[in-house]
Image (cartoon, rainbow, N blue to C red; front, top):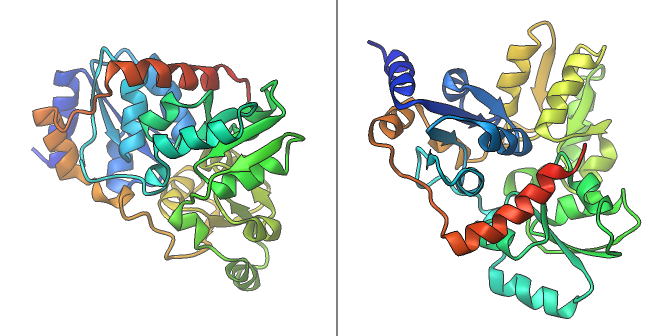
Length: 300
């Protein structure tokens, strides 16, 4: 049997579901039951009746699944796959910020640790950040940990946004000059960028979307060419779903090294051993679950 056949057979035996983020390598995307962005995968983790979730992504994603589905085994195939931005703020730093701004609601990007979620009022993703913030009654909002997503949300709300100085190193490294150069090379292409990009990059783009939003736009648009300003792994899914269209990365260097750590051998090992299992202490999970469920209740 091939490795893929082994994975599929063992997945059935374990009553497992494989979830993969859009930035995973092509082979992992191909064996997954669902490929999506953080919001899509969070919703899936909550509704799945599988006994085991193999989460091909990074640490905070598997934590989120474990928080929403405490009765299931959640396995992160690569223990060392972590999100640097999620670790750019500590619970102590957030608590200090809450003391300084006692009237503010706390919104945390889902790209955060379980401990940060537990100290927040509500989570959001890049797909629903604006809607989440606008759903709150408070006039001030502490937004952690991504300064760029905070700046994007601030453009679309009347509320005062108090940002934390975290960032995604992949999106933060994209530049307005790269957008201009890409337009010059592909003048017919629409430019789609992620809201984790810097404001000056967003200013140069045609549209700003989460990865799920990029997928929907690419299908619906009459354009035949697209410049994609996010992690390069997204290109594979876009080409697969729109074979008649062309997709170009804004930067070939937009690579999340941690997202690329998971491969088929690690997926197979995860199914064989059900390790490394991701768990969240109950006292943290209870609080974090509330902030995630509040996010999932917001209509987009």
